[in-house]
Length: 395
Ligand SMILES: Cc1ncc(COP(=O)(O)O)c(C=O)c1O
Image (cartoon, rainbow, N blue to C red):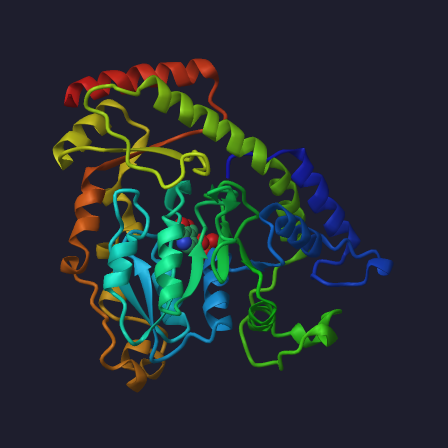
């Protein structure tokens, strides 16, 4: 989260004093409708029909999307080998098996490896827009549509980003966003699901709220209720999310301005090669990613220009660090561990380093330099000087 001010405090105070903290109360009785207003505003921003703000983060968004699509035991879901581990564990939460695919130089899902990894059990794919950088959606969607595979975009690190002029998250059957503390905007542990599919929305709504049958619009839903989870957002979250959304375009503009200045002023600098981008205009500007010929070069550069991270050091974003998943420690009871399900026997549950060697190689050679939207122009200039000097060390 980059920015917060008195506005969030004031809006939260209003909700607290209204004493109506749950979503969906009666406006005539003083209910402020913060969650529903946020959902309408996010739908407008993204150009989608349905939005669901929820507690439980972007993880809940992905889980609800998969559940709403009917993904479950016997199914495989393709996930990139470079993503926060929740992308993969969400697949296990609904009882299916995550199958890893490589990322390409853009650090997004490699569409060609996605296609190679297709098999009779694959029902869905989760392209991830890592570090605010859109994945190659055009080619991923082409492959997915050709094989009747559902697409759930993980846009958790790409709040407000876009691809070919349209927002990430709005391209697939569903999209998930994170509003956790580390994201471009935040409301605590918020997550958002978006879709244009009415049935998917209804199923996701029911899955996220055991009280779905009591909501004001319950009689507008055609889908019968089923027993589900509790990811319902509070009005307090909704109030913060609404103000944060008002800050989004300003934050993105500042991130992008700094990112572009760094890229432009270092263009042609020997030793520095940008990781290719699938859409420089839609990139959120959260990082500048450089790729080097070797891990040694990447580390030499990083040491001389601190303020970022080498991909392979990115903890649980690297599939070789997903210990619990690798060791198949899932759920609280063996009979609820998807790896033990009869329907999942024969699924490709291989998480060894050999499955995605190219991803590991790229991550060893990629340095992600983090941008702060609140840098002054002088601070950016000083950083460019440091980066240029660091580049000379590896040229
Ligand atoms: C790529 C990615 N997917 C999913 C998530 C899950 O989001 P949350 O922590 O809000 O559940 C995150 C959060 O860091 C993420 O970075």
